[in-house]
Length: 590
Image 1 (cartoon, rainbow, N blue to C red):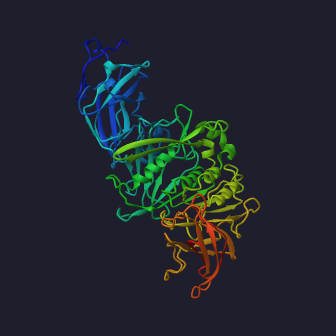
Image 2 (image 1 turned 135 degrees about the horizontal axis):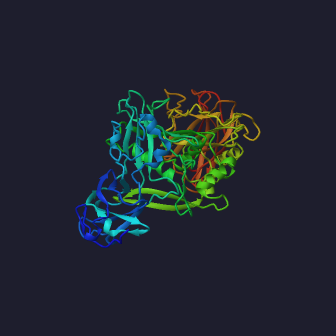
Image 3 (image 1 turned 180 degrees about the horizontal axis):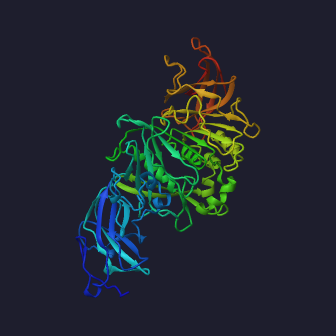
């Protein structure tokens, strides 16, 4: 290979080389365009070398010296960067289209007609970067051969107009019936650095058949099991809602993995879930729906059920409810799966640091933050996490597990349920003697597809109910499964307001009813919107018997003190079975 020398670079996407390099190929066909908060850079790779890499530089501003030394190197990418290796592994769209190789190369513009020619041509490289600030930029692609940048073979773009906004997704497949689609989303190529995987991911979207595209739909996130991936759907199944199918083919239990340095773990999958929740409601031109983000549910089994546990705890700002079937709870006790997870998170004994990475728009700029939270195995110990984050509001979590499960074992589940009660979480749990099989779980207040509890609606956290069963001793049973409360989605008396929830600065009130015998239970208002107890302040409570709704009567009262997290708990509250149950009223003062 002849030695590269410096040359003059023209701004208008044209590179001239000295005569000594005329026989050598150079980067050609370099183009860049900004689309929905991301810049897509394509170029023709060198044809006379193999195994080369490409350094991508960004130079700010519309004019000036456009050379690598004037810019910042964003990344070094491999030869063949136009190949969608993740899709080649799963072949979801090849199967859906029955066209060999469909989407094995990237599609970077919306393709609602499913035209295979929309894929990037062989030999075309791709780099996608999230725009960090609005303005103009140049991009430079420099070949890297044997570890050395070949400046004489580079090429630069003309100025690219860029705009900060929520990154979008490209429509790469649409079902002929119009109710299902697959999109590709790129995470930021300059900062996305997982141990394995690229920065592009497909996900499926399904809406009900004959949906009009205008009525806002509730949202259902689906979590698949180990070895699964996203789905190319023909429609939304089961219930009238928008369904979204993310993929976690690497098997990270819908959390994340080590970065390329293998010195820390980053919650990469949780980032993708957070991004998609924002994008679903963004109203982009390639979306064929509207959504009601007050009702975002999730359900999943096994690894997907594990994701539901985590989403309920860590994304209570997004999810109103989640339903976990046979999901893991304390990962270091997940027996047969510990070694599998160790390959992605590092060994249990190392407990590598877990970083919560966020990509947010602030003041017209994209800000990417990395916050060290804890060790990764502590982070994936949901019992420990719940107790360590008492102040964080969580979704209403429904749990179902089999005591005969030989895959995701039941053994740690009772400790998780104990932690949920001690940390005053809104949840209900059910178990039986089944093995590792799916079982949905619903209460009268919320079934897995019912969407009856809104994310901005206060819910009660129950603990130590006298009508609970014992998960350590009983073959079948429930915790909090024999209690319900009156709410818009489960109104005890639709023609009366006497049983309605009150969540105001001066009062919190709720009617609670037992579906078995009368019971006692510790009650903590959670996810309150206006009732905000002050730390250490006194609060008066009273119990009103609504067994005869026409003649409610006060039967008990007392005072409680808000704890250091601003939570108020009324212990051993008596809950009736008849009529509208018992009404708990809490007010500031003694």
